[in-house]
Length: 97
Image (tube, rainbow, N blue to C red; front, side, top):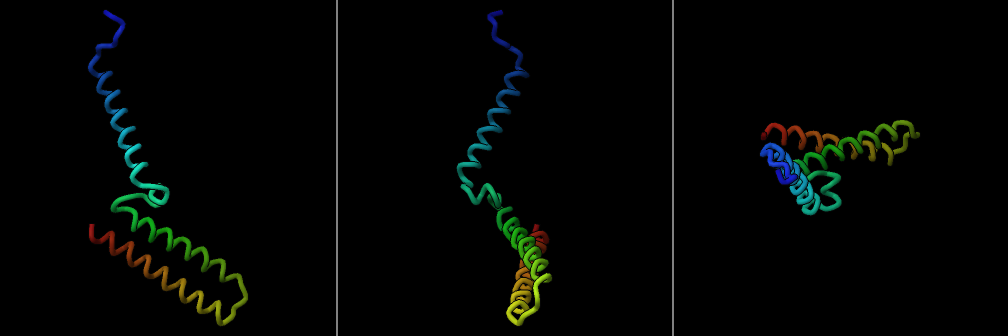
């Protein structure tokens, strides 16, 4: 023995680990800052729509605690439209898969 581990299983595990780290690094470089937050590839549009729906729900809930004005009613209608559009996109994208 020359002090080197000659077990083939050890080499395979090291190669898998290196391959995984290289793939992760490549995805980090390709995705950019927004890609790290929203994801990349085919999942990004669905993730963005989900973020839009959740944010709209939060803003709608907060607006329920404010005194009602005509402008606030219009704002709530717009948020309802965003929620509906986002949910339609999410469920439409899910049915295509």
